Length: 95
Image 1: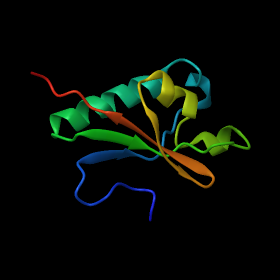
Image 2: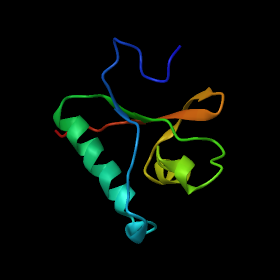
Image 3: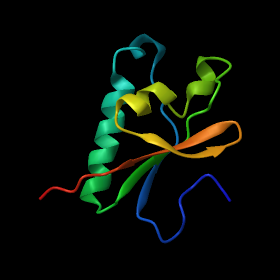
């Protein structure tokens, strides 16, 4: 089983963040995450999914986004996949 969602699921995948070092630790990635989730809702997707590394060895290894950021933004662990986790958030559709 690969890192992504099953084919039948309506899931938007978040795989990478690139934040300039001068802008890190200022909430930029969280803003990008929220924007991506809002875009997924507009596209009619049911879940947002991401793949943070369990124990990043350096800041460079946090390119999928840090686990704590996802947990703070309503994601929870969906699956343990060896050296990374699959985290998901159920998206709320407007209405």
